[in-house]
Length: 146
Image 1 (tube, helix red, strand yellow):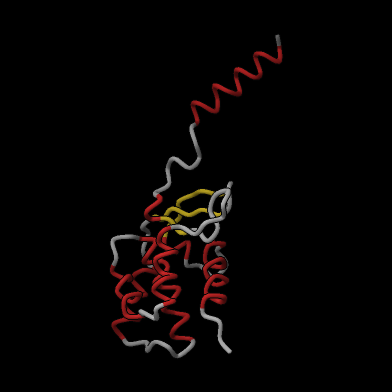
Image 2: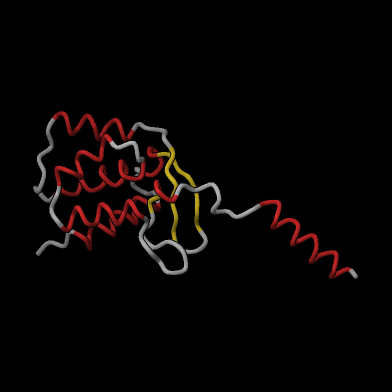
């Protein structure tokens, strides 16, 4: 009887609390290995294709996107391209990047099967943030240099 009560309490607790993934926005998500299949989120796939096609001007335009995941990725990619001398840091570009760094807009994030959350752009762009480190790792492999 005791086990039945514990089991029922557990099942009711799960149904009340819902799915931890229910508060995330899949169209505005940053993830480099999400879910069981370890797939990249849609914004990461989109930016990956732009990098592959060397459409760096389009990536710069994403700094003004309404999609906060794209804005995060645009900052990280632009900074790496500047570092590799594939993009020139103009005052306008510097100002746009600065705006994103100061933004408290929230972005859905995922990592694997178990980590789903929403973080501010400001938090995500901190050098020691897990998503920033993951983005840097992704870019290192995406933009391999000789």
